[in-house]
Amino acid sequence: MTSAPETKLLQTAQRLFCSEGIHATGVARIIREAGVARKTLYDKYGSKENLLRAVFRAEADMWFRWFDHDLPGTGADARGRILHLFDLLQHWFAGGNFFGCVFINAVAEHEKEGGWVRGIALDHRRRINERLHGLVTEAGIEDAELATEKLSLVIDGAIVTAMVTANPSVAAIGRATAADILDHALRARAH
Amino acid sequence: MTSAPETKLLQTAQRLFCSEGIHATGVARIIREAGVARKTLYDKYGSKENLLRAVFRAEADMWFRWFDHDLPGTGADARGRILHLFDLLQHWFAGGNFFGCVFINAVAEHEKEGGWVRGIALDHRRRINERLHGLVTEAGIEDAELATEKLSLVIDGAIVTAMVTANPSVAAIGRATAADILDHALRARAH
DNA sequence: CCGTGGGTAGACCGATCGGTCTCCGGCCCC
DNA sequence: GGGGCCGGAGACCGATCGGTCTACCCACGG
Image (cartoon, rainbow over all chains, first blue to last red; front, side, top):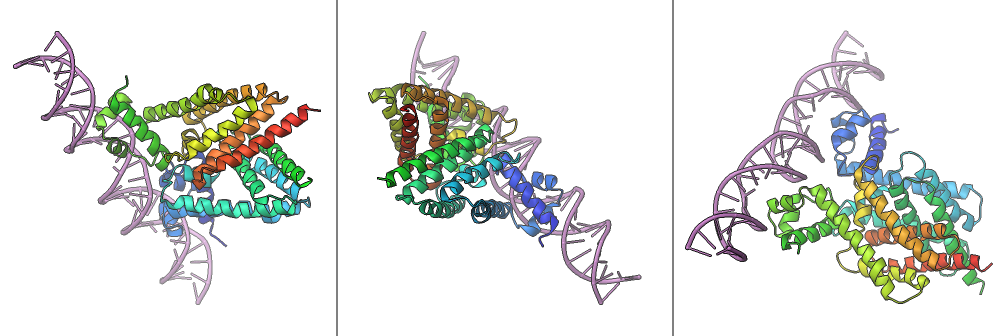
């Protein structure tokens, strides 16, 4: 199993990178709040940048646990699972350690032309949208690409709004907007 | 009139803060690309933080030119003006100097508990939503608060998605989503 | 009982940070 | 034509940055 200092570093970095900002978080603070020696961080991760990459992986894992475990576990139909995704978002927002999506925040504070961060965020977004597209198609929506892009945009809007306002209930606004999108798309099919 | 070095500094900071990140942009780079002396920056703005405040003011001014000049100038009805806002967003995204909203980006890379940045972003958001609420009410929508929150969320989603993907046409996705929201709200009124 | 490996504590490095200061060139107005 | 001032060039400051390295501690297996 992974050693205790390693996971402690990952969790501390995940919290600090989002709540304080990545550039604003010094290595000294990470190791102090993780209760770990400086050398241990560099033994385990090699650099602050690699630690950030590990945080990316951890947040991506959370999303795919949602798609591959939590959502199928509800037993709901495709439309219900899409809407339930916003309940999972609300739970995330309300968890007390939510300060935005680390992918979005990282893109915001890194160079956007030619940097490596945006590429990772784009890949993450692509993989999320693949899962969304599957649900949308299963729901019987004709223009699945359009509906997927709309839902993806609403999800990002909910995440950013929750970060700025610190109000978890914006997920319910996103849920209602998603319902508008799905209703519109399914009504179009009924023609 | 404001002196040339002052506006040059503001424009350079606006571009660099968004394209490279605020913390990642050093004062040395700002003055180099602005072609201005270090002393001039501190004579005009006093600190990097105050320069950031000026960038906040400049971006807020853009939004209120939209609401108070551009949108009324279209002559469209309230629903049409709400949708036209997304055309303005698309023009903003496609301008070549778009790397996200400086308010959102600044919140993303600053401390979110007890910091001054989030307060400024919240105030900006409140003032935008006031204008949105006026348009939504004028469009004859019953639950104006809900529709306003939905539209605000879609706008933020479009901004963030455009930042990550560098694709201006996501504004059209936002426009179509806004149409779904308005249609749903206006159909509810027809009952 | 001793050796080894994982971990802590913390000194230390060069680079860069935001901010202050001095010096000097050139332009404008009396 | 001369004095005042705006602003460019850049040296300089203490603090902090990410990263390296040494010394020591301690638990565990032969």
